[in-house]
Image 1 (cartoon, helix red, strand yellow):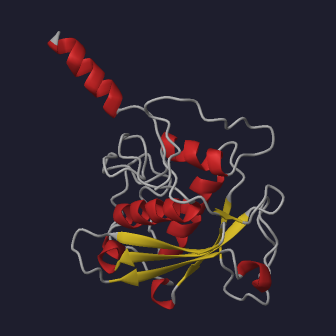
Image 2 (image 1 turned 90 degrees about the horizontal axis):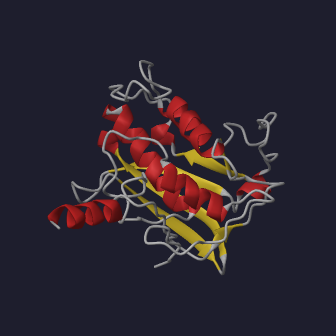
Length: 228
């Protein structure tokens, strides 16, 4: 009997799930899918002090800068199968943005006004706060997002990438699914994980499904699309 109770509790705690932060959405489409990420001046050309990423991480063993971290994080989001969301670095010279990567929208300053995520360092008031994300909403549309990351995180590649990935999840529209460990958005995820996990990817596909993808929610304990 005790074994059955333990099995049920364990199964419940490890079920899949994602939650949405808001009913608002970015005004992007599969044909025009890009949101640009813009570092504040205090975050450019910074070398992360220690590469403590796991050996399976794509940046393992490399010198990590804020720029290489952002490129790697954007690729992690962009590679989610069946999701059309694309992240790209805000061009250093908006007047001459260069040729977009395959799959990205063509950059214009006018378009980017309502499609930019600003990322800055901060000294949080709480020692337990590693970062925060604040959505800018107009009606049913998300028109911007501001991410603040603890300055101390520039000492650790894992902390920096994990925190920025988590906060970009919020900017995408994801909340904390505390009934799962299979999400970087969950407070209970493995602390060694720094990248998107299965439930994060499920949420991104739900929010930004490519044509032909069935995202109808199935009733279960773990799969939750509830908003606050």
